[in-house]
Length: 130
Image (cartoon, rainbow, N blue to C red):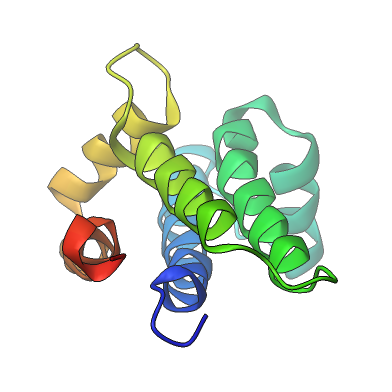
């Protein structure tokens, strides 16, 4: 697993989740003219439909965590599949409202998200997984 991109990708996706969460929080606070406490933000993330698209990324990180803790150890094929699922989530859909479309919109307007995406994309390069 040391030479596979999955552990690094998992950490990058967790950081991306935080970036996206903070970006969406700022938009929500501006639109609603409120300041969210950490508890209020957590409630929105888990219960509000507006934030439901972020749950897909949360679930993917949890899947990676669980897979990397499996006994016997995770196979290269399973690691490759999780990298593929990540790629599909981030870039695999053009359907309106999909995670990939919403992510692309934020990436286009937020330099920090765009920079994170450049680094994450390196994990999708096939030669890194051979």
